[in-house]
Length: 86
Image (cartoon, rainbow, N blue to C red; front, side, top):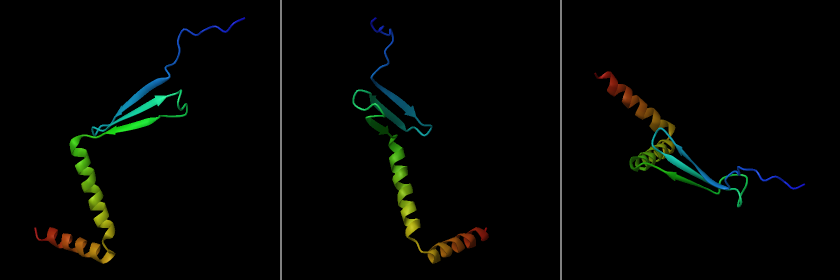
């Protein structure tokens, strides 16, 4: 007896495209002949405004992290006083 050939073979090369609500797009490329356990590459595409916003958030976080506790307390007190004027 010989093995019967299946009429439908699964593709060996394919890709999945994931789109987020914020406009980001990820393309996961698979080649099961090269690596059967996962993607061989992942490509991220961001909208033009997204990278600028991300860099600004990273810069803000780095600045906040570098501030001492005393500086943070002074800034919080200043914001409280400013809000009480009105």
